[in-house]
Length: 333
Image (cartoon, rainbow, N blue to C red; front, side, top):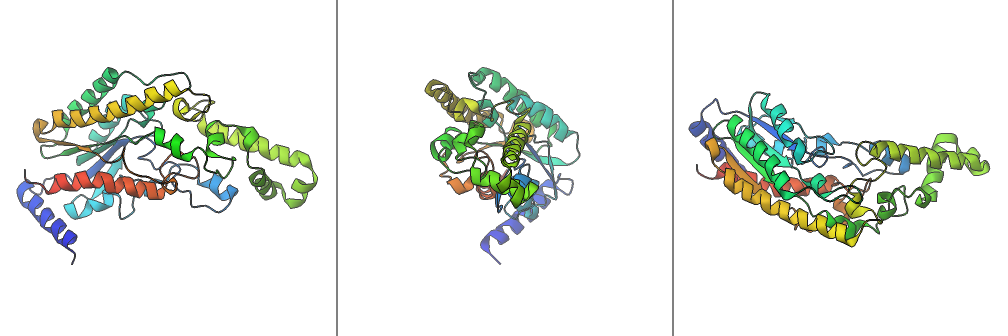
């Protein structure tokens, strides 16, 4: 029996004795596309399979996924038995309170993770991040509500916002399965589609002979891919890839600098708010650091969109957030 397992068993017994059998047993997640594991399943072979993998990969969510390293799985030795999520792709701090209300309408939630802020940093071309004061109001509304509604002895964990500018600095020149580079994807530059990929998709759709003998079929395939990709981003980035103020090549250094400054200021604010609300109505409120400065690699970013965490990236996020949760669960009250 490992030392960690012994520690968890002891902590579980301690919680049972000190908190009583009525201690709630569910995890709730507030978040955006990171918490839904959007496009995490990039371990695909060929463009057709990769296109089929686009979308949410819930089982690999760092928070509520079913992998042994997820927060939900790691909570099992602590008498937590189920997980619920209100996370939605594209959410920002404006959506935090409605998500909190959705979770608190369910019975048994005692620990809530919050991973929000990336979409507040990310804006469309020419648009600045919101004011920090405005975001602070949304954080206050959410934490006030949660510390009012959670049982005494409950937990809220605010996760740090990743370094969004890191993506442009490290991923722009990386190849993409549909486009010649991640930058071409972020620009939605359909003139920079990977011709070998277009040919492979065409062959899969229409057959090798038609695609090699009738140029129109190659053109049809290019147009189909363009329409498919545009449909995926409709309602998220409109006619832009999400986070255009940072990732699009038409953005400016000033816009990226403003987004980077806001990213840092938001993380500082989250840490301060965790301290401010800690212990309110007996609820533990903690900040989970280490995500912004984590030395991610290109393998930790989804090869499907060059933007979201891959499955390995989700596992790293789970490790980082779990450190704070485990420390909080095992410390004396």
